[in-house]
Length: 173
Image 1 (cartoon, one colour):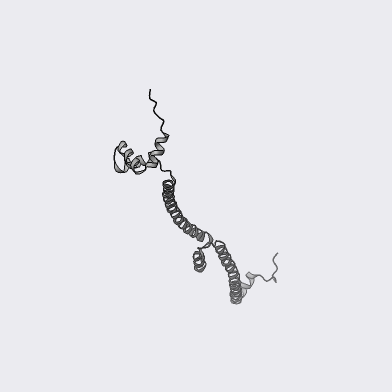
Image 2 (image 1 turned 90 degrees about the horizontal axis):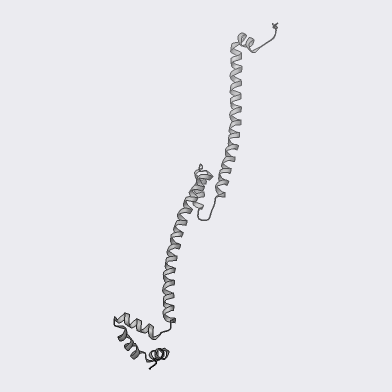
């Protein structure tokens, strides 16, 4: 059975509506101000920690030659570690593509120079023989094999003599 002397919110609101409205308003405003202040403090701490974490994550990505990407990502206040990583990878692809092209060009140049050097060495170190001279003269002057033999024999008597000495004598029956 309800006690008639028991004071409840309903009984106060019914009996003193103006006073309870003022008390509620005051409580609401005071609670709001306290909650707002606490929210600001918590938000500041949370935001500071998040920004610190974002910046540290970006700095972990730092690679030589990509400092500008990291600096801009930190400065814009919104770039994530993943976004900056993608920018660095894209920049690296461009750099590596350029290096690959340069290496291919260097390889071709090295191959060309190397082949020319080998040919030059072979030419300089190859022993000049009567046969090689005959072939050279025949090709360069576009003459018959017999005419080339005669010409080389006149121009290089030592080579001709060496060649003749190596020939097998023909037996006469």
